[in-house]
Amino acid sequence: MIKIENLSKIFVTEEVQTKALNGVSLTINSGEFVSIMGPSGCGKSTLLNIIGLLDSFNEGSYLINNQEMANITESKRATVRKENIGFIFQNFNLIDELSVYDNIELPMIYAKVSSSERKKRVQEIAEKLNIVHRLQHFPQQLSGGQQQRVAVARALVINPKIILADEPTGNLDSTNGNEVMELLTDLHAQGATILMVTHSSHDAAFSEKVITMKDGEILSTKVNQKDVNFFEKTEI
Image 1 (cartoon, rainbow, N blue to C red):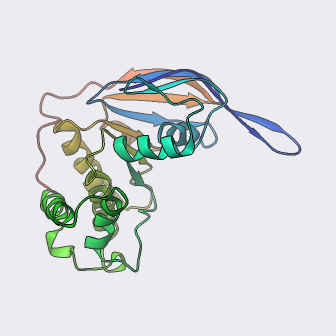
Image 2: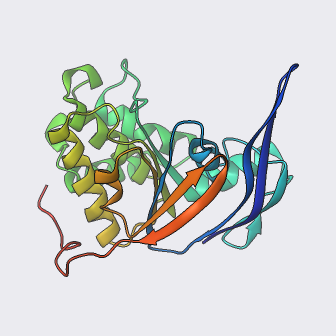
């Protein structure tokens, strides 16, 4: 699904050049749940932004579904992003002036999905994530965990091939954080491909594979050993 080879990214200012990524190579297969860890400034968020086609790179190769992403036009980048990727952010990035329903519906409007299909999909994803009773509420009326559920619903409603999660529990207390991680685990058990950036070893333990980065390079890749029942469907 995703194949990256010898990827490098350089940030240039008037005074200095900083190599944020230095020859990174990795592969993420369909259905995998992968975490990326490392200290602040190690390059993990830069890598996530490049994979999410929110940023470009200077050298190397990035294939998504066998399509090369180097030097593609901005319009092509937007199309590939829209057709393949759903984002879950640390700060939720919900629009306070819109209801839960409208927040979930918004990406489908951009994708020019019909009104009847939008209504059907919002209802289905709200039922799946147990937020039907919140559809007419506004983000500020919800708990942090509920807001993140809405953000997950918004990411999933376009049926993305991969979910990119950037510190999805970073602004949540432990109870709401565990709720979100159980939700991601449940989505993975149903076949979702997930790439998550996190500082939390607790959160990373929910994934199948943990990639550790430092100074723009991959230091190690570890496969997590799971109990037999770890990925059984969780009631949420």
